[in-house]
Length: 441
Image (tube, rainbow, N blue to C red; front, side, top):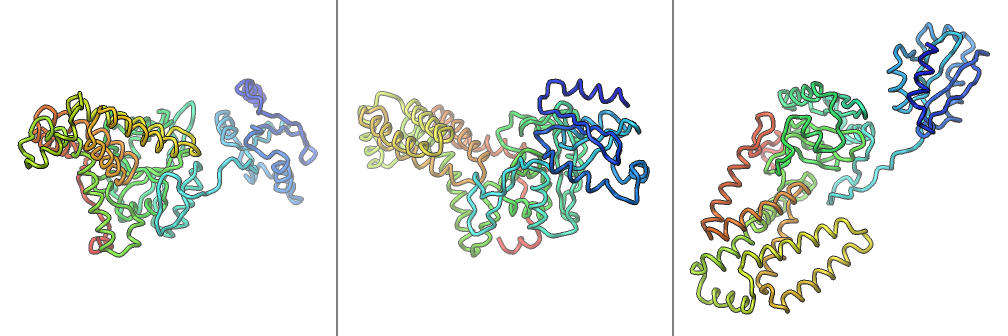
């Protein structure tokens, strides 16, 4: 047992926040050690003295009656230290006791959602602590049928992953496969969503996400009622919902607080937005450069007049504008919030006006690109937003080669690709609703 203490000192010899203090308890010499960055040491020592200084028990009786948790292996001690526990070592008994502590406050408070806008719904969101996130879900969803399974993965950095499902609703086969996959690859390090996808056996190159991520608890609860499986990862302020369906990019739970006609109107707008964002740039290329005969004479002459003096073919013109717009969108994400929106808005206006004045692109293309960008932002979820931004280039290139026929071929290929995607046998094109929603939109 004394050898353990020396080996533990060796493990943490490069850690300046590792502390080791000598003290007395029941007039017995003891040693306290742990990580000072995770523990409120003065308050924790007071807590230990209050809990262990019980007059009717001796220190030996406290240990023998299992009133404290005694560490049996050296690895248990190291894991407990990394989890923020304090270790009490009694040299006379050669016992290591894992004690509960008063931790330092290292988590941010529950705040408003920052990545998703909420309309007429609860305004709390998930944070980085897994226990707090599960507690938020239980607060909003008071039921005894909530299944919660916690699995640890990783060797260098142990990560806790919680699987949540609603008993009698959850797809048991899906939950069993995800649980089995995580347990079989428990040695895999999970640092981000890509590593999680690889651990679950999916390709990290798929542009269509296998999961839906959300920071809103009510979205998680709605998904649990539909029989989906929810993954909550420690240090990750989002819940991952499996599986993700095509229909999920058009629906959100908080819009159910609106009357059904208004809810359906919003969803129809999102469907139109997806069609416009995907097909409009390709349609411009096809009608301008390959199939101008499809247009009415007046419209064709108007488009030709708007492109008068433009030196580039339609494909180069469209790709140049789309790439510039992608750069502006990316800059708006990376710049500080205080100057990002202003700089990108002013830069976009000035740059767009300068390009038109220089006759590098047509006025009509500016309208097409602006409409595409606005329509692209109507879908639900950042993954779906990025996916549509990428798919429109496929349509543009095929439209430049085959015209309107290329748009049709591209649409068929995209639909076939969507149909080929599945999560453990569940198709991406599946449609799933809970019983209480089947008659209410």
